[in-house]
Image (cartoon, rainbow, N blue to C red; front, side, top):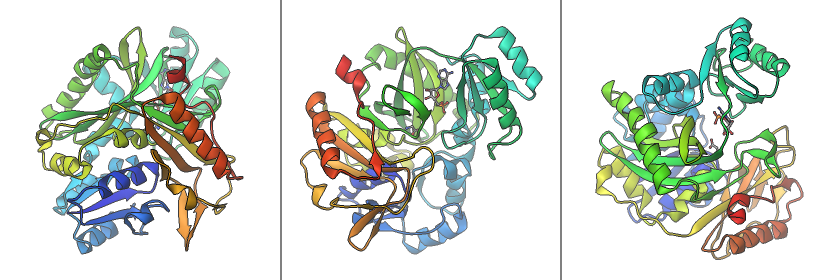
Length: 421
Ligand code: AMP
Ligand code: GLY
């Protein structure tokens, strides 16, 4: 079987790593890929926003299954486009991808189906914002409706900040939408719940917790994620039952009734308080870096699972898990999530590859001849799997210390919740 993975981040390298281990895979292509995927797959440098060009290459390469990594092509309808051309593809259709593409769409589904989530109001004017302030306490969460590369959510502590943020959104700070949604602030512990879904069934696809803020002790601006671990102990069996019954099933039924079935990965971002889960957001893809800590815990052949799911035969698989804990620490370029230098050499990476139970997953890297260079904000994911979180943490940080990349930084407290338990 020939497989193409669309995307260029750590998530896509992790997918490539797992899929490349399958005996059923003959050819693996990553479009466009990164310095890490290049080692195990054929990278193809084309613009993934150009669906027509993408299709021509997929046909030329005789691809049997396309797996979409990031949200943007999903929200723009890549799945519908490729399915029309009779290409097998794993991911949600354009309508279902609005779960991530429009926060207003997602919240309205919650409202109609009594899905537990923060109270909210869609605002069109500053007058609407002021009305919401009257009826709610600070902090208030302001969200741009459309995709905003992780920058569209601001937790506002006072009226001045909220009015400023609202005006920026109304004036079109985010190209995807000028619409604004305000939410009440939820207290609790955040965790992520993942599923793999076909037209007929869904399967549990792991839990994880990530560290979104750039600084030690959950401080500073939001990022794509500075590190993660799986599983997330806060998602107990009883919480999981509520997640499925109160959140997942009503959502999937909504799409089923409309005959617009949700298929693909589904990522539910949850806030858990007193054993009760509330839905913060849906993402219509795997998380990054959550994918990096979930896939190494799966015993099965991932290519087979995804191929079956794309053919609505998900029930043929029973996903089996290693009991081990998996953790990843993200090495970033200095300056991230603000501006940072690109094309900085990462020396000695080749030599550092072979440490038992530690895997280097590339994100923003490029390989030129035998050398790796940075070309993104999040550069490498140092990922370890093991039984003991303390030993694992030591191994990962020892590796980072020895790598000693002068242009990089990382959070030194990834996994603090696990260590405090
Ligand atoms: P989102 O893109 O909706 O996941 O928001 C990004 C981050 O903002 C989440 O991971 C939460 O940490 C935080 N957040 C979003 N909505 C809320 C809320 N209603 N209450 C508390 N925190 C929130
Ligand atoms: N790590 C958060 C995300 O993938 O959205």
